[in-house]
Structure formats: C-alpha cells, structure tokens
Amino acid sequence: MQRKPARGAPHLERGAADVVSELLWDDLRIFLGCAAHGSLRRAADTLGVSASTIARALDRLEKTVGYRLFVRYQEGLKLTDDARLMLEEVRAMERASFSIARRSSVGQDPLKGIVRVSITEGLGTYWVLPQLLPFAQAHRFLTVDLRCTMDSTDVARLEADISIQFNKPTNPDLYAVRLGHLHTFPFASQEYARQFGVPRSLEEARQHRFIQQVSPLLPDGAYERSLQVESLEGMIALRTNTSSAVLYAIERDAGIGWLPSYALVFGGRFVPVEIGIVQSLEIWMTYHPDIRKAERYMVVIELLRKLFDPRRFPCFREEFIHPLDLVPMMADVTETHGGRGFLAADPAGQSSETLTPAGAPRDRKSLQESPTKGLGQQHAP
Image (cartoon, rainbow, N blue to C red; front, side, top):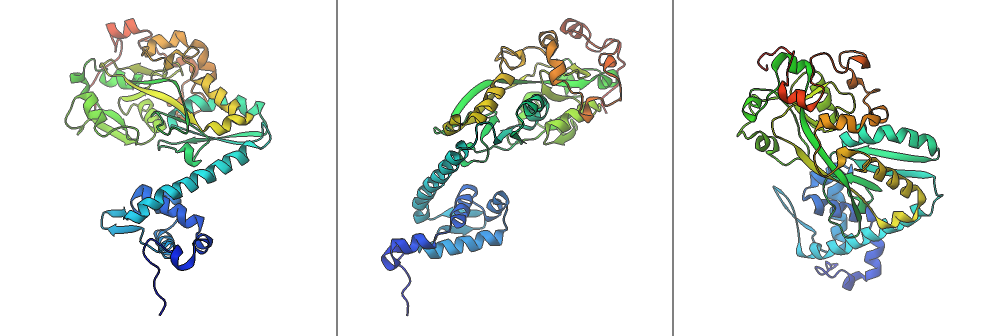
C-alpha cells in the first residue's frame, strides 16, 4: 500500500521538483484569499469564484504540499502552523509576480496604455472627473480607468496603479503623498430651510431629519458621537452608501446631510447648518515606486497633485474654511468643477440664474444673523 507523505515534508517522498511542478498559481492565490478573509464565502466573493471552487482548490493544494492548511470552524477558517509558515513564502511569490507585471507595464510606450486610479466615489465623480475630460482629449492614446469605490484598494497587489484614499498607507514598499484635507459640513436644501428652518445648535438639530452615509471608511457610531445622541431613531430620513445619493437626497429636501465644504462653490442651492460639527479627513495618494519610470503614470500623478493642491484650491487646506467664505475664494472653479451635467444638479428644473433665490443667506454674516430670513418654518417630518 502506498504510504501517505509525511506531514510537512512532502519533498522527502516525491522531491521538491515534483511538488513545484504540481503547484498551481490559482490555488496559491485562493490560499492567500482564504488566509486574508478567514472565510470560504468572503474569499469566494472577493475572488469572483464559487465556494465550491475555493474548496476544491484548497483540497488540491493540501494534497500537493502534504499537510493541512486550515482548520475549519463554524465561524470561519484558521491557519495551521504549517500553513502559517507557508503563507509568508506565498506572499513573497505574489510580490515577485506583481513586480514582474509592473516592469512589463512600465516598458510600454510612454503615453499609451491604461492607468488605473482608485478613488472615493464623491471625490472621483464630482471633483476629479470634470478635469479628466480635457485631459483625455489631450492624451488620445492614454486611458484613465477611474474606479470610484468606498472600499480600500491595495496598490501593492495591483488592484490599482494609483490610489486616492483617506487613510495613510502603512506598506513601506509604497510611496505615500498627502495631497490635502477634505472637510465636510452639514447642509440643508433651501426648500428644506423654508419649510423646517435651520437648527443652530445640537439640541435643535435633534428635532430634524438627517441623511446618513454608511461606509467602510466611517467608524461605527460616528453620527451618534457627532450629534451626541445614544440612538439615531427617528432622526434618519435615509441611509445610503454613496456620496451621490446623499447629494441627491439633500437636494430633494429629504433632510440635512454632510457634503464637502466646497459644495456651494459648485453652485449648489444649499444652506450651511451651523451646529458646531466639521469632519476633516486627510487625502493621501499612494503608488508603487516602480511606476515612476513610466511617463504615462507620472502625467496622471502630476494631474492629481494639481487637482488637490491647497494653494490652488483653498478647500483642501489643513485649516477649515467656512463654505460661504470659500465661494469668493474659488469663484473661478465653478466653471471647471460645477455640477452642471449631473442629473442631480438641477432638481427643480430651475435655470442657473436662480441658484440663490431672494431671502437665502448669501454670506456668513447674514447666515449667522438669520439663517432662515424670509423662509417659512415648520417642524421636520
């Protein structure tokens, strides 16, 4: 009877060359996914394959290496001691494969090809995209693949070439550049202000309705802490995971929500809500140093640097500037970054000449003196 290979030492039975010849990279990739997520189902969702495919790959890999890789519990997968040692070696193989892929990519024609940029949905759609259009016209053979997502993107694993994100990368193999700061501020539509008034304190705010954005980037309980309440029950009109949906709901008078401090610069018909809450996040750009050798990556990196330059766009400075104060400071930005062209930009079908109707606050002083001057008030629904 054929003897089973010794645990942890399959090369003694078949030889290292035999093991290497039987290894499949797809199986190793699935092993990495399972180790990262601790679950067959989550690994399958991330890798875009079925759970049965994951299970078959793990069985095949265990037979090849000669030892168990995971102990399966009801709550998920746990690496065995042998698999934990193997994990670092497979990660090194993965890094080497990524390095080969990057060098191959760098060797292409200077301004031809695809540059994949991962960015949060709101910044990508409303800030970067308008400036990508003239860039695309000027670089006919260069395609920017703009991937707007609220999930984290791993540049080291080639999920994108360049990432714009709110958390500082910790991988020492990557370049990380702080571009600026994003400040968000609560806003209501002018029609909401007419009907229900604008709260001027946290106590008054608790009687209003809010639009809540949920995201992996926002910690649990962020809204409760900001509004200083134990529960949001009765306060949330709508919960959504996209910035565009938040904008749409605010414009449609559904409630108060947080938008970038530059929202008024875009011509938005909003009233800033002064309740002492400002959220600020650092904006980081990260990429692998290898891509600096290719001109097509560097022209995109330079474009992104310019788009978030705090000297050019004061909204990205470290210090918070009130939304009403930003309007005169960034008057020339409206034409290049304005909301025209988006379906949500003109909810009432009004012309651009009616962006600031009579009675709405036009500067910070008038807002502080009477945030709803000339606007009727009811209780929030």
